[in-house]
Image (tube, rainbow, N blue to C red):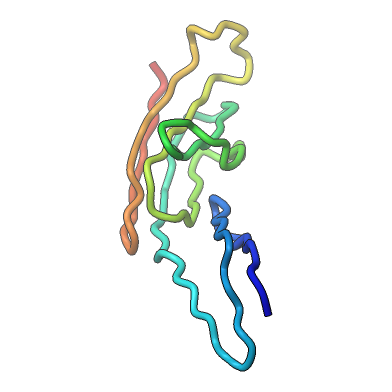
Length: 113
């Protein structure tokens, strides 16, 4: 019984604050349906995924080295920032923004240029 802050282990994390739990009752919380992201990127890249929260880009996860990767994400506006592993100049960094919608698959193709 009381008020609790909840952290739901989704990607990105979903934080729910001041959820009231009453005695001998059921408290229902709603979690948005996820969407899927399929990323195709050049090999040998360092890449990171961010989500837009209140006009700020918040870190979600570092992506792996695979050329194609699939993630399950909460709905929202996202950005991938990446560069070639051997690159040492920030001007060679690329970014791509996209939106994830519930129940939809979004495909992002990042080409070498």
